[in-house]
Length: 158
Ligand code: FES
Ligand code: FES
Image 1 (cartoon, rainbow, N blue to C red):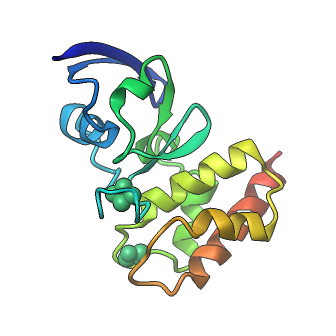
Image 2: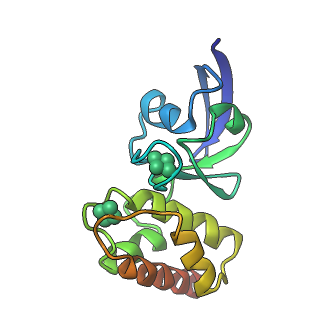
């Protein structure tokens, strides 16, 4: 049965009327029309659907929307300020970590959750976070380099 569920999405209150067991990614993409969040495996394996909920990176393909009730959800669309990219977007793009780009929004949101919670995360912690993501194209090194570059940019900005 459908229920009204309200949460904050990229800083704006949103209310949807859906079955509470619907997965969050379906609500974000199909109900709220934000298609930057991708669906690869749809079973919690690839990380491409990652969004940040209450400051923590979650896989939205295995998160029922009922868990988002009252939560603060950020998707890739919430990071840039107008035409200015977030430092993580800028670094990941400049490090050559974007080829087909399918894995990129999920990886950026993973790093956003990590650096918001722990700006001084070690390289090992960054690599552990990135291990939750599959990328068919890059060989992973440019992604790790982009993550380290982003961390430095964010620290220099403070
Ligand atoms: S689409 Fe969610 S983890 Fe792959
Ligand atoms: S850039 Fe293609 S899957 Fe990662």
